[in-house]
Image 1 (tube, rainbow, N blue to C red):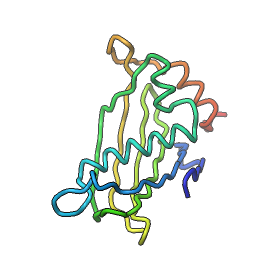
Image 2 (image 1 turned 90 degrees about the vertical axis):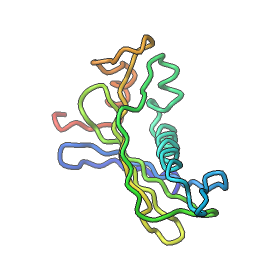
Image 3 (image 1 turned 45 degrees about the vertical axis):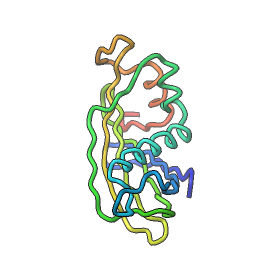
Length: 155
């Protein structure tokens, strides 16, 4: 399942998806023997890292090499079912095209053993330059990445 990639047209948005497997570690467990709620945010980050490896050009190494940063601006999480020690979290990370200098992702985290949806959420990252100023225009590497992977309806 790791490395599963899908490119599809949904209405006016192109969606790219990556799926990765993450074993739950003991250090992620809380006093109730469940994955601590904050660890799901780390799973989202792990999903973005995997996404960047499978769709080269906007991974963390690519962003860092450009000298431009993409900090989180918005984060949402909804929790539905727990993960426990020795579970495998299946993280679906979807890039959602939005116009402008931003990276939008949605996430769905499933428990591998029974395919139950445990959590879902979304993040928005905005680009800032080396002085920490918000960028209005897309960085050149991001525009190149979009040309490679995104099918625009006007084309």
